[in-house]
Length: 387
Image (cartoon, rainbow, N blue to C red; front, side, top):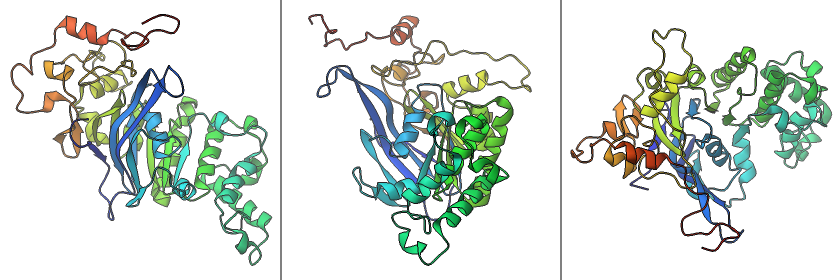
């Protein structure tokens, strides 16, 4: 890490950020034994961001960029290697017993709704279970039991809650869907049920991990519009994880572009997509279909994403970058402001570099950096062979 972590910030809102991550890092051990790994995969490295109240922040990147791992870190489904989280200004301890209270505020919607719903239970069960687990008053749950005796019967309370949730996600009439099983629903309907389940506990933040990538193109827009309506109607903050930068521009206020576990560019959605500053963002946009584009896209970046078990030094995009300079292969760039609210982690936008640092990398250097590394570190022998 070089210096303080760059911060991805959404639209300013009163009272400070709702969710703040500082220097989040996740390394997965690979090979070896449970006590001594041969190496680690650098899935997420030193990512900091602030999620504003009522804002939609898109995390964009190709497969393997670390965006889904980042969403799981924000949901506290996996333990970070480093970094910290703060919810509403209060730090969240790594082993805090307040995990259920945090989960009630920060809910995750997964990519595949069929895999995230239990096929042997109906829709009503999926929506009632979080109400009971989190003790919604009148549900008969752990914290709601004292309210049951004074109010309506739990069954009536839960039935009304299920109907309200299904109506919020436009599954109407709700009574027609409550008794159905996941296999009886379309992909879009299953994803709406998954969203309704997340809304059951009235969260402040919804983490949507590729919520439309498993759906037919014809119904993706409906789910995106549903997310936009939830923000407008309920003031819900949303983190939208996607590989589709075009849908991110449509839905989000702020876009953060990830590559190989790091944030490489961030800014207002319209500004970032109209004037991308980082070569990787330019590559993503050139690959996105655009019927208004006058010329065919020019894909200048070559090669494949790096092996994150042995990531390249410096800027991790430099082996594929058409503008790679000597400094790109040596030093990690930090986010540099390139416009109003827009920043790019690219040495092209840095000032004060020497002529030697700006010297273009030779083809041999780029080829060596882009070659796949051996499956094991140089100082470790392959199983079954002597070092």
